[in-house]
Image (cartoon, rainbow, N blue to C red; front, side, top):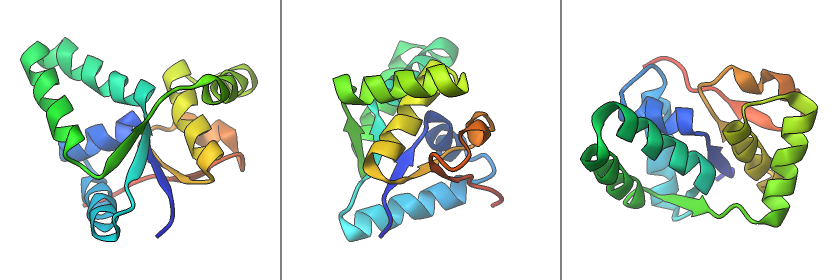
Length: 135
């Protein structure tokens, strides 16, 4: 199985049953079956929790954190090396800072970045991108 890194937008797409949710669901199912978790930066994990807290409150955010912990997703810490690479992406491509961590983690792991954001187009060939679409 290929390596995949989830951006916050991909997991939000899955949770909110937006277009592309089925494709993200299939990746999660394949990861569980292969026992090879998808990856996500702790920064992007925090972006999801913050977004839910802001709209639905603390209890909903805590519930979503519990749900994420039960999925085949490895939440990767933002160490110095990853943060330096994220800062490089920020300086070179002017991406939103949290998005830089998703891109940096994908680049570091030589993985495909799964995102529903258009922001990553500026990366060109720096990172392979999968944009979940359709139902």
